[in-house]
Length: 196
Image 1 (spheres, helix red, strand yellow):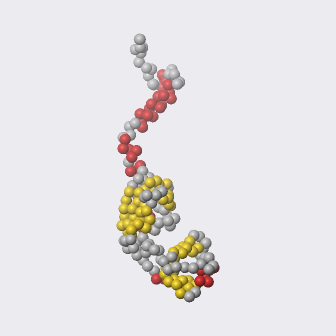
Image 2: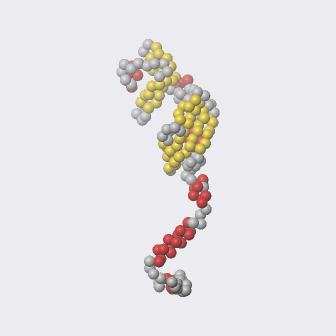
Image 3: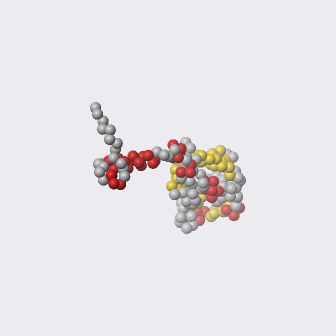
């Protein structure tokens, strides 16, 4: 078999018109592939290229919140959680710990006593009449000490909860403080996905 010894035509502007038109896309694809191949293998894995958690990010993550009595919530053995920062789904202190983390990152934070859910506020412990409870809840409902009861928010947007602390004729004592108030907590996270 004899191969032509002629070199390929030059790619100067004057000679490109004599090239086969089907050759141009191939050359373009080859040049593009050559340009992208100059990236190092680590460039696609660089944390500088990973999304970073911002103040209004929508996250998919695993997290564990634990206190002196053990885990309060733990999604690591379940389906990951999804939440929006800035929407009140986590305490502001917990949200602040997430800002700046990158996708795929794991971290564990210690939250000092009262940092995550505040300090106990005695004004949030209140006697509520059974008449009011009948109007905003279920008429005839009975309550047990230690039970957590949800109520509709006064503005109709969402709910809030109170723990039953005591009972007396015609009234129930509720503590509307967060159940984790005044506690040191550990907050462990694994950021799975970030959307801005």
